[in-house]
Amino acid sequence: MSKKFINEPSCPVDYAFRRIGGKYKGRILWYLHLNTIMRYGELRKSLFDVTPKMLTQTLRELEDDGLITRKVYHEIPPKVEYALTETGGELTPFIEHLKDWGTRQLKKDIQ
Image (cartoon, rainbow, N blue to C red; front, top):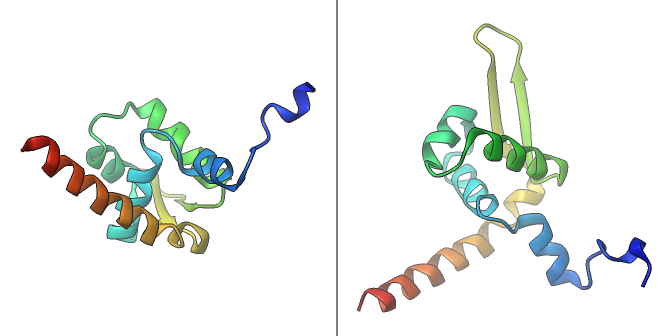
């Protein structure tokens, strides 16, 4: 098998999960949906279990995938804001459905 094909998605589901999969991406997209625009520090507080390095890396991946925008204000102290792109916003109903499913499953686990 050629190495060229190892990193290519095998189907649309694989492609989608490569773009939004991971521990933090779904949560970041959801918080940006709820808050419209968030600064780095706000995201950091919302994702209390993420390291700064991992948050930065995840934000870059989401930006590279065209799911979020990053707006830098050249002022002191520096200000950076993140927001969903139109493509990122298209994921909101699916993330909401996953959230609802997760809520139901957590209730079952607690019982």
